[in-house]
Amino acid sequence: MNSNKIETLTYNVENKVARVTLNRPDVHNAFNDIMIRELMTVFDDIAPHSGIRVVVITGAGKSFCAGADLNWMRRVKDYSYEQNLKESLELAEMFHKIYTSPKLTIARVNGTAIGGGTGLVAVCDLVIAAEQAKFSFSEVKLGLIPAAISPYVVKKCGEGKCREFFLTGERLTADKARAAGLVNKVVPLEDLDKSVDELIDTLVSSGPEAIESCKTLLSSVPGMPLHDAKKYTAEVIAKLRISDEGQEGMAAFFEKRKPRWAK
Image (cartoon, rainbow, N blue to C red; front, side, top):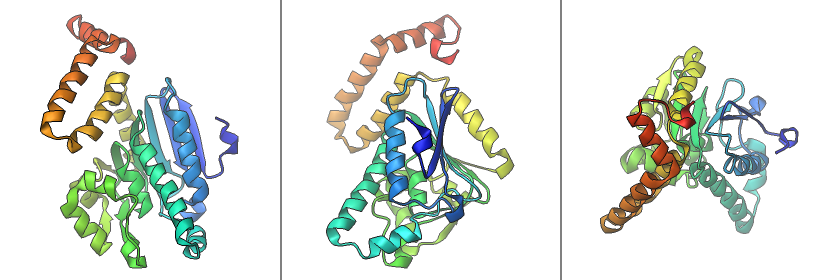
């Protein structure tokens, strides 16, 4: 992918890690139709990339993502239902593409995440936030609702917390977001990169095929009847045990050495 053609992001790959930075600091990294499409393009590029194990998403400057860009919203305000549906489907597809990425995703939340910005946090596998980060589902204040992001936030936080957050539109501290399950770890801003790097080291020590299968398992099992889940989970583990990666992982364990993927 030609990174020179990206307008709203920076994207680079190094040492098994893809770093995707929302790069509109003058508007607090608010997203518009261009950023939505560029995020989809970047994640399409990342998905089959065998050299990438982890994706880190963050924001340039002081904010993570302030939600929808005001100039974009001004245009959308005058759209027809059909035009609004097209834009909304693209937004929903972007969140789904990140959520279902076969790669591990980390949100490095360096500052404020509002509305759809909090949605970007919710679709990532793991989230590390700076102490001063703030979160909000502020859509109701505009007569709107956090519709496209709701499936992922409800999965992470549960209906009870989402009723509180969605209906009040309150501004959440990083600690409250962590207590609700939206954030995994809160650290001082100066320790953010160190904490992300330590997490990356932990993640890349695991089998890449196992990680991908684990993500599929987590997405599939909650919606399955127990009878179906019983068969599905037995089949998954049986296939992994006889796979090259499973054989290597178990051999490495018994031989007291690191598996090939962790070297």
